[in-house]
Length: 382
Ligand SMILES: *[C@@H]1O[C@H](CO)[C@@H](O)[C@H](O)[C@H]1NC(C)=O
Ligand SMILES: *[C@@H]1O[C@H](CO)[C@@H](O)[C@H](O)[C@H]1NC(C)=O
Ligand SMILES: *[C@@H]1O[C@H](CO)[C@@H](O)[C@H](O)[C@H]1NC(C)=O
Image 1: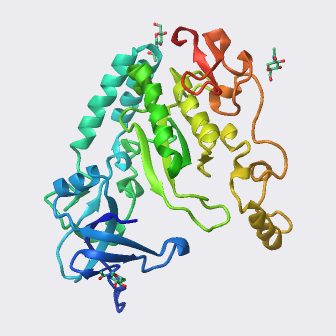
Image 2: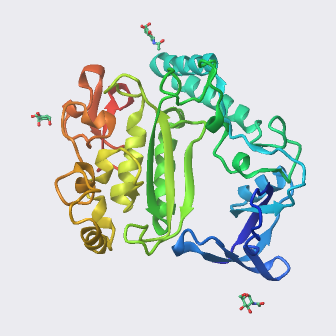
């Protein structure tokens, strides 16, 4: 693919004594043109080398954001600098920051009020305000406090970690991380699936059609701070890898602490997911707990038989198998669980009203754009 690659360069101080750094992963034959990018560590054997017509090295956050907005590929390169180079950089991803526990609990309570008693407009406005606020936050800091510009120089363990939550202080829960089960903080569900790249334009057009029917309702259904997250995934020769170049889709949304509690406009996400999996040949992300998404998914992997042979050879006793993996791999039964309200938690696709929450006004209905979908819709939305 002829593409422009953006190389984000960070100065990373490496604490390895007596090691020579690997060769520069970006090599161009003419200045910044005709480049080969090598994964020098070779951790992913199916994607060690890629080529780019041109690369660019943004020096400021603005240049980086502009390149991303223009749809360029990003490759992060960490440079080794001399140990005497000063700097105490920190990767300070807002989502993974330790936060006063009181703020986290208040934020969740506000979210519960909005979900249970708020309007679509209020939910969307709140999300937009939060998105704007988080865009103003810096992801890197040069000294653990503020961002003064690139390059960021610091220790490997501070720059490569997913965020400061890794080292949160034990302070009797005065501060905590948003997902800490000891507090009533944020609680989400996350659907993830991929759609072949060749079908992505039609899939996105369908999603836009669904949004245009009622934009407020759409944005109130997905976590509008993040929206519908898309990323590119290359095809892989691995037996259970993506058979085709694909886009990975991630949607995060509110989850109630009460089991089987219907969520406002959950039918929107359910319709998108069924559309992706059934109309556009999508496959679920292996790490998600949406039972219905795995129903029949294994048949979309052309090399599954190869995989099962290897699995039998290396694990004849099934030591690494369980009921769930047997279902997902199509060995023994379906991953669907059919019972009352099963569609509320993604255990099944509804086929009758009892799979939804008829007592609370949620009935099993066809999708609005993808009519073959079966989703739990609130009677007033239909
Ligand atoms: C581009 O790079 C490749 C691989 O490094 C090389 O074989 C080729 O000759 C280069 N093309 C031009 C026009 O320089
Ligand atoms: C929503 O409103 C109802 C009725 O006024 C109330 O009982 C409930 O506590 C409210 N929910 C939240 C989360 O505030
Ligand atoms: C609806 O599904 C439930 C649970 O699977 C089942 O017990 C019930 O008989 C079904 N009702 C109809 C009308 O099909």
